[in-house]
Image 1 (tube, helix red, strand yellow):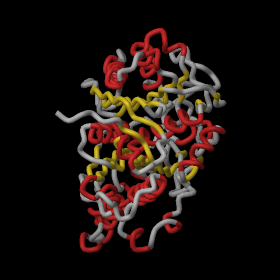
Image 2 (cartoon, one colour; image 1 turned 135 degrees about the vertical axis):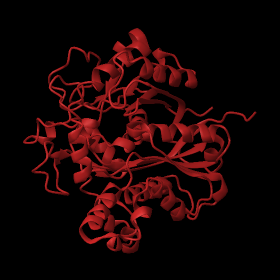
Image 3 (cartoon, rainbow, N blue to C red; image 1 turned 30 degrees about the horizontal axis):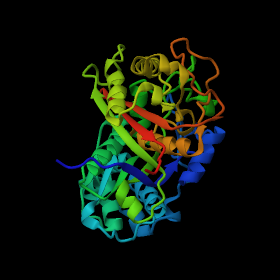
Image 4 (cartoon, rainbow, N blue to C red; image 1 turned 180 degrees about the horizontal axis):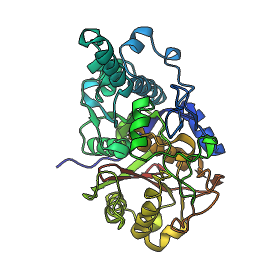
Length: 417
């Protein structure tokens, strides 16, 4: 039986609609900056939803060689760049000094959707002989992890989890388990997504999942827990964290940013896209994360909620928090950053995990912007519109994905023994 190790975070990297780089991202969240706007990467005029949170400041040629750009999809480019930032912050050597004891566990929902659309168009218009030989290597979801492995010469596992909007949280949870069980000394973990394409927007419009009421005022479109919310706003980006066993980080004098102490996951087994109104399974995911961490509800100071801004998610997640934390739910602060960065699908949980780490480090609760008209079914303290300072020892991050996937992580302020 392996001894369970403490797991710490020593590096973070971010690509988002409100900035590239962790510092830019966090400073934007603190000030309530909104990254949602009218879609620029294609003409959205024929779509019922014409807004998204695009990572406009991410210009691949600023970071990557032309050859790399040509042979990778946008989601892979984002993942590699965010991984570089996290790796550099952790002050790890390139190539990896412990390649066999270093792993990669990423979450992704859709893969290279723009590559799929481009190749389908060539197939129909010009025939199969005109399809790119790199279609499959660019498109499939595991290629971000594969390219990161090549970047740092890593020989441990390079796995990709696909659990829809819970992918990033699950990837961190699996990485947490992988390290605490003694299977690796370093794990590059997180999530990435870049699905703002005609196909992606069109498909979610067909599902009637996206906001359509705020096309003329896009910065108001994502409004978690607000009475006037009408759907989510798609975002894109990458959140990458470097995880290590505590003793490994200490041995190399790494700066420790925070600690992951618990993980819980469940499945509704109810409906492919709609959450169960009883909130039974997301409640249990919260409870499992607390139990795994050895924490009581009263130990929790902050929850970074999934908070998608959809009519069904927000009240059900509120109910899950109240059932899991009991009376203490009314005493803590809960917020959703999706009003600022949109819903980044497979990257959401990782970006929100990084927000938890920064919130704990700086003692700051990021706001839920656009919360102007409270919903009577969403009656917790959601830090409306303006962030608040205060001590945070323990933060939870929750993700609820299509397919009924529920995942919760517990983060804690690092305190040396």
